[in-house]
Image (tube, rainbow, N blue to C red; front, side):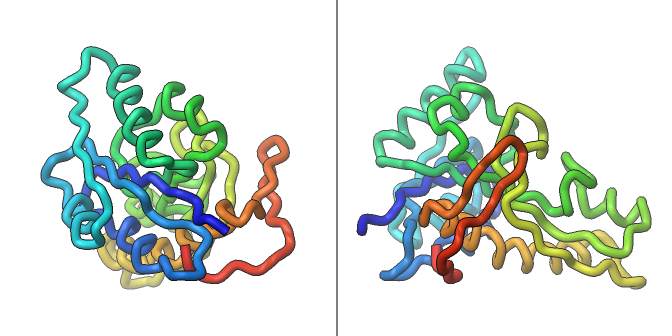
Length: 209
């Protein structure tokens, strides 16, 4: 069976991209086929090149509109046969151009237990709110900010001594476990979306993306 081709959009260091790359294996159901960044200095590009994955920079300033920028990204993704798009620290809101090209096939990972603490600095939001448990969420991307149907979540305790870097580091370790699982579930056809509810169909999923 052929592997599902995954395109990753990343703006920064790309640690979740690295988790997806590291999880790939000969028997895995998916492979990273291309990485695209809006930041020419993104470490994610170096990670892609080290893994012999095509890496592209598509700068927003080179296009008159967000739609034109996204259309260029879509064209690149399609040229690599991408079937699933994974956002990995991509610092732009996606528009309908991308979502319409990949209907319910764009995933994101967020460092909180959504719907709590969407948007930027979720770990700091959690600490300021005084929660005892935080975590991370993989979700489908819709038109809102971190509002799409939830696929997987992992809880991470908030410790008394935590500051933002300490909590963020433990949540990031959970993200690196969770994202490859979600990608594998999608690639295996085991995610069923009904309204806002995502069901996981029976079967086996390993940690390999």
